[in-house]
Each structure stands twice: as C-alpha cells, then as structure tokens.
Image (cartoon, rainbow, N blue to C red; front, side, top):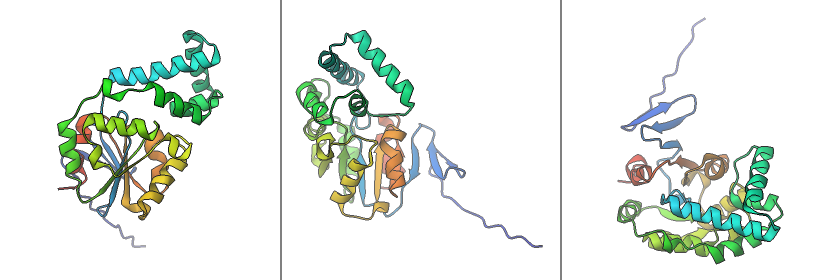
Length: 240
C-alpha cells in the first residue's frame, strides 16, 4: 500500500523555536506565541506584570490587600498567610487574588472597594518611553486592556506609565463583577470590540489566568515573561 506524506512548512521568526506538537512559537527570551493570525485586528493586554515590572508595587498591592483581609477577618498576618496557603493547596489551581478572597468570603464588590481605596500606582510607576514607542507601532490595531483591578486603577496605571492614550477601553474587576480567569471578563472584551474572536490576541504574563480562556474562545495568545518580550512584540507579531 502506498502512503503519502504531507509536508508542513512553517516560517519561523529569528530567535524562535517552532514546537509542532504544541503548534506554538517559543522564543529564546521566553516569550511564547500560542496563536496569532496575520489578520489580527485587536490586541488585549493584561496590565499588572505585563505592561510593567515593579517588584515594590507588586509587593505593595499584595501586602495592602492581605492586611485589609486580616482586619476584616480579625486575623493576624500569620493566620492570613496560613489561610491563603491552605486554600491554594486545597484547590491546586492558579487564581487571581480576587478569586482567592471570594473563596474566603470576601465579595468581589468588596475587593473592588478595597483596591480603589488602597492602590496607588503613581507612587511606584513612571512613564516608559520605550513602551510608548512599542505600542505606537500597533497603530493599525485596536488596543484595549483587561485587568483584575478596578477600571480606575487600571487607567491610573496606564497614566503613570504614560501610555493611556493608546488604549481605547479597559475592562476591569468592576465591569463584570468577575475576575480572570473567569470567562466573563474576556467575553466583555469580545463584545466591546465587536469583531470575530479569531481577530483578537490576548497578551499576558500568566497562562492559566490570562491566556487559557481566550485560547478556548478562539483568540490568539502571547505569553510574555519580561518587559523585553513586550518591547519586541511589534516585530514578533509583524506589526511593521
């Protein structure tokens, strides 16, 4: 019996490895492109730890919210950390802090209020000219942001980075009352853009939280592991 073999030719960008068993591009610098069609019309960015890297601000967000949780529950810091660790061990899933708090009896609406009161991105972040130049190269695409913070905190963060003008809208924790990786925030982005899901690409730093649901919805997805990954996105995605 004669057997025919089809050959698949893949154009691999410089500095990338094509992994056929996963159908993804893995770059030497750590960035992974899971799917990004040449006809992409919109990019949706996670904000925290995607559009900036600032350990002090990340720690401040976590500490302030955990301390607030402790005051609400009457727990000392040791018990707060113990309760969070036990919850994560029980669920064995990657979740957002808002979802962890919800499992501990804190409604999303309360998380929204706490974040609006406590988080101060301007105290930690400053304009990033290289990021602004990077985003300016996507002039033919619609850019939006999806964050697990309230919209006002997301906008203040983009303002502090000097890139707010590039983003048409933000979907935040207070938009849908759900936190990534729940599907509702992604569906809200999709509805707001009003385009075919295959034309949307999600960019984030956590696969399970930022990318798994968009991929299941038919979006493209890019996992970034550093700011250098973000700065090279226009070249990696063929933005010109």
